[in-house]
Length: 246
Ligand SMILES: Nc1ncnc2c1ncn2[C@@H]1O[C@H](COP(=O)(O)OP(=O)(O)OP(=O)(O)O)[C@@H](O)[C@H]1O
Image (tube, rainbow, N blue to C red):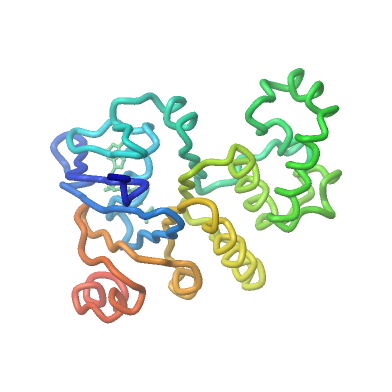
């Protein structure tokens, strides 16, 4: 029977010196879903992404992605399997152009020298062009990343992940520090991205959450407090009490 979920997280637990930052957490992500994780500071949101991408080792549980248990794999193997992760602060190469940043991230280009050869390759050029259009940077391909706005750097970093064609993309507060207009465009971008893949986003801006979420998971003290549509979690008294009411 084909697996209904692209990601199945079951009983995921991690404790740091006896403190359970994530506590028997289970959730399931479907293909073409944008799952948003919300919750108060320290709820364990970033730790969940760290566990899925192999940056932090779990104490217990399973994380199944396309039949593989990610908890048995190294960070680089998880990336190779098709899980992309973007951290909160943009980490683009400031001295390189938008084009070069995307070129370096193209999966076959190993380092700068590999990338120079691939420069000749029409397939790569076309793919860079396509990604640049998706991330609203087609007119900035020759611009140094250093001269981009904060929001444009965030989009470039998303593009650097997209060019690797991950089936699951995880983003930690992608619109933090963005203008209202940039937030709107990022919502548009995410809605386009999920046509071909699933996305997990950690977010605090509830307006943005409403624009992107297929489903919302609310974490509190490492446990799931509530889960469902935006409407469902917004009207859940438990969520209002510990998070939205503040
Ligand atoms: N490597 C670690 N060692 C010890 N404690 C940790 C470690 N990583 C996270 N924690 C603790 O786990 C808890 C959850 O942290 P986490 O960063 O996942 O929360 P969060 O929900 O992402 O919060 P925020 O919204 O503030 O980013 C916090 O109390 C944090 O101090």
